[in-house]
Image (cartoon, rainbow, N blue to C red):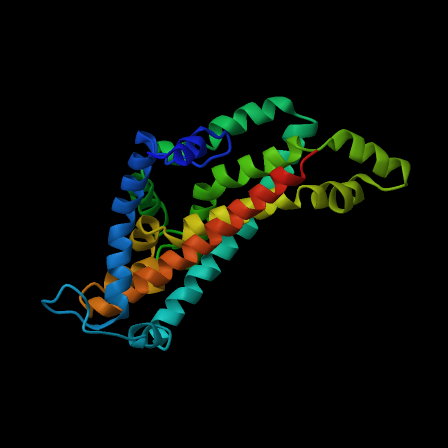
Length: 279
């Protein structure tokens, strides 16, 4: 090695070749294994035909175009949006006042809510579905097979995400000081809540909505057992299309994954924005 090369290596600012750590290699390997099925599904959705060769014969957007021009898919997509929007609206109407009261006036209620929101995870969806079928399959409230049973059911499974995000948003601000300032300016309790407190927890509410929506977009058990094909949602439609073309179902899976990924990214983006702007 020449003296100039030795001097270059001895300089403090000289670049050195560093090998990736063992932890980095493990992370790359895990992400590669997780991404391979998704990449293969995307390739099959874009393939005009894929036979015995390693790569598809040709690429096309035909299957995505066919998917988005199928009335049955569009109807199932609209039903999923309708049910998820109804469940989220019900959650906001019920959870926001409860979280506000637990944070400001009834601290013991927060401890009860922390235990209550874990119950949807303690009872398996299959068990809950069987109980709901026995209660609402007949009698004075025959709700099975209608969206009216899915909306309150979805409310229970998004309750943990909704309550925790809103409660964290309330803890991030000084609610008492904001209310006192609003009263000094002549605002009543409701005006102080809607015009002062609620805008300050807007980011927490948005995080709750995006994360809950992304979770509901992939829900299958309740939708399949409680309504099935009588009110076909997106996941039920995907299950019913298993016997169709593999290219078509792959396009459907990628579309659902992209929709869920977008909602999750929006929720994480709002969470990062709230963290960056926090005092």
